Structures are given as structure tokens and as C-alpha cells.
Image 1 (cartoon, rainbow, N blue to C red):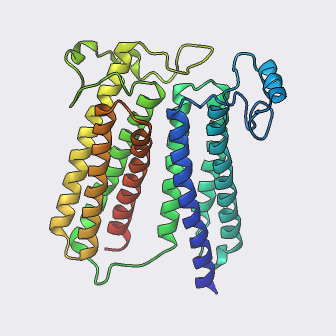
Image 2: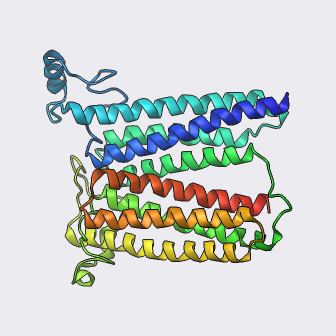
Image 3: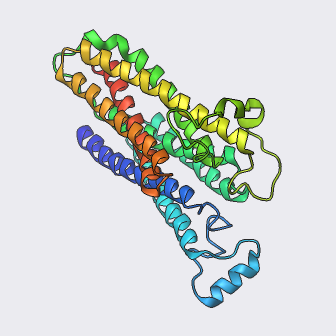
Length: 335
């Protein structure tokens, strides 16, 4: 009975992980198509549950929100993201309720409740993203909240699947701490990427590896990472001047170099020291995803941020984090 309950909730968690990946992808797509204010209210769209499309609906919507003319395509991008995010919230609520119901049967309770709390706060961030007119710090927090929800769901899935590496592999257990450091470094790099995107700084540097000639003279750290921006009617398309945007982008590039070097070292040392195929394959998988992410980052520059590549860059960043969590969890719990 206990095994069946665990198996059922694990399936629900797996479905939620897949849905969370879709939500992260749609969030990136919404942001990159400049559709974050496609609906100027929340949780509906111009007071509707869908998007105003008839002449009468559009006229009424533009009368209520004269500063935001209806753009149906952008509005649909935003509403589809909200639909999927709402569905994910219901899935997570179901996981929390089932976990509480089965708390005496070995099912974790704290982690599902934590995920539920995160997703409730994430919904509030979604509202503030609109009501505070794409304030960069709120957009960044919303991005990180989506990643956090996905990662916690994945951690819960691992927690519900307590297998061990056949025969163990204590030779690499000592590197679990380095895996945690890698998670911290990657989190900071994702945050830098989110800050770059939310401040519309993705295309200020058009050459590799750091930026075009003279970038050092443009660096300006005084306000570039100030979380409280000057008061504006809207932060759509950014509020920073060119030097601040260059600084933000350059720090993201440098962060990418540091992250790549560290994760390559971690994967290499685990591959070299591991005695089991499990950890060797995990190290190879980490390098494969990391290489894909680096190539996507380079492609963003070479091809001037094509939408498909930019969205993939967000999704693969999430996959890289999940792989690193999987490797670190395995080192701590299964070696």
C-alpha cells in the first residue's frame, strides 16, 4: 500500500515537472516577444478570461485601458502562459494535499508544502510583474521563482525514488560539496542572465568573447545592479543607459566563463575518480548539456538573439540545473 501511494504521487510529480518545463518555456517566450504587458490587468485580460477579439470587446477594452491598445497576439502569449501556470498551481496543490493525507505512510510533507508556498508567492510575483509594469527586479524574481519551483519538484521526485548505485561509489562521495558549490555558481549565473534579459541588455554586446572593442571604458557599476529603479510609468524596454547595459551584459559573459570552467572541472574530476558507470555517465551528461548551453549562448550573439535560440537558452539552463541537482543528490545520497 505504501509503495503504491508513493508510486502514484511520483507520477503526479513527474507530470508537474513536465508542466513546469512548459511554464518556464512559455515564460521565456512571453518575455522575449515583449508580451509581458500584453494583458494590462491580472489574472484576466482586459477584464476577460480570454483575449478580447471582437470589435466590441476591443473597443470596450481600449476604453478601460487607453494606455494599452489591444494586441491580440501578445495578449494570447501572456494568457496561455497564465493558463499553464494556473494548471501547474493546481497540480502542486494536489501534491500537497495528497502528501498531507499520506504523511504517516512515508510520503514527504515539508517539501510539497514548501513547493506550494513557493508557487503561491510565484503567483503574486506574476501579478506584480503586470501591476508594477515589468519592474526588472520583479521580472527577475518571477524568473527565479519559476526555476525554483521546477528544481524543488525535481528534488521531490528524487526524494520519492530512493534507489542507490549498485555497489556504491564512495570514491566520489567527497565531491558532493563541490556539487553544491556548482549549484550556487549556476544559480548566480542564471540570475545574471535574468537581470540581462529583464533590463533589455541582451544585444548591447555583439562580439565575442566579452564585448566589442572599448567595452572596458563603458563599464559603470554604480547603478547597474541597483534593485530599486527610478519611478517610471513603465519599465518595458528598460530604463538603463548604454553603459549600465554593457556592464550587465559583460558580467553575464564573465559569469558564463566562470560557470563553464567550474562545471567542466567538476565533471572531469568525477569522471576520472568514479568507479561506477552511473557517475561517469552523469558527468558526460553534465558536459553535454553544458556544451549545448554554451553553443546556444554563442548563437544568441552570432544570430542577434533569434527567438527559438533565446527560448532554448532558458530551457537548457533549467536542464543544466536539474542535471547538476541530480548529480549532487546522487553523490550525497546514493554513493
